Length: 139
Image (cartoon, rainbow, N blue to C red; front, side, top):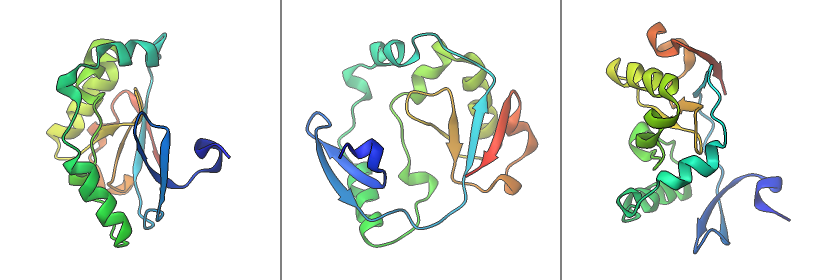
């Protein structure tokens, strides 16, 4: 069965074709921000912006996998997305809202290629200015 239809937490390696199931994330609140913005051909355009400078040394991924295997909750320091720095070119409203969150001390990262983004902070704890131009939802 295709991983994305089955769900769960997994580590994808190779070119994304090797899928290793991981323990599910411990239950924790997070906030999903849905900017009032649509980007035409978003995925194609975002992937076109990725360069070798966006690739990591896998340290963050390795640490996050170890935390999942240990049943530990994730923190902001365990989250990353190569598309974050590219959002400003294609989704200025989302980039502005992410910047407002960061300036308020709330760590955020894009979901996939954006423009939606999330925080590992519960909705009741983030400053109101974080949701400027977005609809915030608990997940």
